Each structure stands twice: as C-alpha cells, then as structure tokens.
Image (cartoon, rainbow, N blue to C red):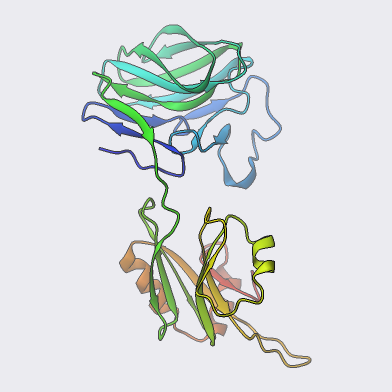
Length: 292
C-alpha cells in the first residue's frame, strides 16, 4: 500500500507487514523547558509541530525537542512487528540521546543527519511507548514504522495541486476534488454575473494586481506553483447610501454530502446571513460578506 502523501515531498511505500506512525500522532508531548507557545500554538497547529516539505507527509515533531533533558513524547503502539524504525533529521551536528520506556526499555542515540535518517530498535511489546530526552541536539522526528522485515521504502511524492472541477453554472455551484485529499470541497453563491477562474500561482498579492485588467481568461497562468479556485463576481453594484450582501456557502465532505449542502443553500441570501449570526460557532461553513 501507499501511505497518503499529505503535502510533503516524500512518501512511504509500505509492505503488508509494516505500519507508519507520524510523529504528530502522539498521545502527549511536554517540554522540560516550557515554550512560549506550549499552550497556545499558532495557526491551529499542534504542540511541537514542524512543517517541512522534505518530511514524509510534511509534518513532524521539533521546535527544540531533544535539546534539553526531560522533553517527553508518548505514543500508543498497537501494530504488530518486532522492530521500530524511527525516521528523523538532526541537522545541528550534535547527537541526541533518548531513553525509551514502556514498549521498549532502552537508551538510544540519534546521530546527526541533514536528510531523513533511520534508527532501528527492537520492539518488546505493544502498548505505551515513552521517549524521554537526555539532552543533545534538536531532533526533528518525522515518525516511526513498526515492521518485521523492513518492508518499506521512502520515495519522492508527486503533489498534484490542480483539482478536478465540476461546474454547474445554472445552479451556481462549484465542486473541487484534489487527487491527494479524500474529501470534496464545494461552494455555492447567490449573485450574477460571475466567472469561474483558476489562478495558477503561489501567491495572489502581486500576481493579481498585475492581472487586474484580465477579465477574459478562465485560467490565469503564473509560476504554476499553486492553484486557486476563483469565483469572480462582477460588477459589484452599490448605489449611494446603500448596502449589499453577497452570500456564499462552503462545504467539504463526501461528494453526495457536499452536493446536498450546496442544494440546500439555494435559499434567499438573507436567511444565511441570519443563520450565520445566530449559530456561527456551530456552522463554520457559512459565510457572507456582511458577517465574516
């Protein structure tokens, strides 16, 4: 099987006797020296989370983990196998020692590596696995594989940023499906005229300013490092001393669930403005220009 790619440049090809655990799937993480963002992590990330494209699935545990003695990570290991292979990076040139306890009782040493490295350790039993750092270099732990015969390989991952789209112009709906993401995304809106466009660039700030004059092209080609679905509603007419509300609904899930949500959205726009104001904490997928 192939483990889902996420947004990293690396992925795993796993044999039938191997199971991958991303480092972010921890039971708990505590730092011996409390970080300023230990209790309130920015941008909806998890404690200790690092995102790098060079990692498998693009995520791992870092933020100083291993540099101080007493940092602690806990995992629940429920896979079958006779060994654990840790996959990590350690770029500062200083080895880092870790005490394993629970499913494994052993002291191990992560040696410096500027690329993804492996550290193989015999697995005694399933259950709780605790990693307690003894100090040294900062470890960027990508995760570990529970395996018997090392039946896995790390290979480059091709990331498809361009979604397959389904446009229903009469119903004013747009459905998006990305190859590497299991769910569908959909949007419905209540105003005309409009144009559905694709913007293929990694940023919008400068690129869109340079393309302001382009009201004709359906695809705006930039550096091709990103892909944005663009609902281009124009003109936005507003009389003096008046106001206007433009309403849209966003949904994600299975294809049938998204289509059902978009169909239900075909109600007067003001209904959704009221619904958002009354229950915005419960219905984060409702958005209008007057309430977001």
